[in-house]
Image (cartoon, rainbow, N blue to C red; front, side, top):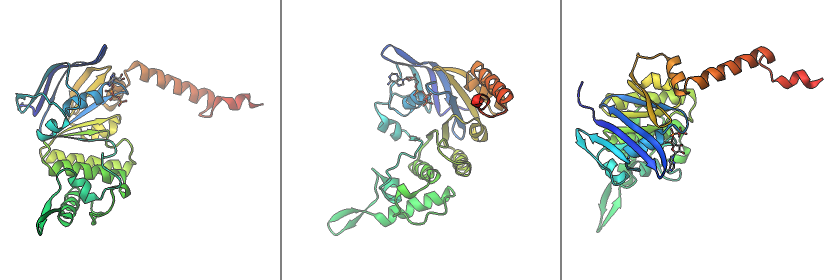
Length: 274
Ligand SMILES: Nc1ncnc2c1ncn2[C@@H]1O[C@H](COP(=O)(O)OP(=O)(O)OP(=O)(O)O)[C@@H](O)[C@H]1O
């Protein structure tokens, strides 16, 4: 197997006395989607904050392109090609599409003795990059980000990362707040990023979304890696079970079943009403 783009070996993270991540080892390959799964509080956010330079690991080794790396902050991670997109796209609602695409890296042009923001160029590039990801409804880069749908905002943020040369794209629950159609669109964009050779880390609670795009899966339970497998090695039921910690899921199913039998799907209090 070829060398992973990003390799974690024995990563631990504690906040004071609280141990949040234990001995995480993980490989992320270029042109693949790694789905990071786990219940609330499992440690997914903490792990991606380590990858994106927000937190430093307490111990362990992180290698990018076969070289050990240690980020002093998010800008160092981003300089090395690691881009993180958060659930709501992380963009500013009152900014135009063109502005938010280039925030911090605005194209400029000369105007007499001045250097000014090149709005037409910024808008043109932002609209073109979104089009390339299949968002064809947007043709005006002056539109405000606040007027975009959730899926379009995700697309904007992903297009931006791709444009600025991300090698590793971290998507933090990109489909969580979306309807089915929009989620499908975002999943397609994830696959397009993968096709461009970008390594994608996709965080989700949704097993179906994960199975649709994932090549490789890692499940975190209480800060430890409970499973690490490739596409096709586990069924949907097995993955759901793992994510919910097995027992919990069985308990929940039994509870729902008895409720459906006793209450025929209606709330119990109906029986006591008279
Ligand atoms: N700065 C911190 N200080 C202390 N504990 C923290 C800190 N950040 C996270 N934790 C704890 O670490 C655990 C893992 O949190 P984390 O946010 O990484 O989980 P998660 O898997 O992303 O959950 P969710 O799906 O709910 O976002 C939680 O118990 C949380 O309370």
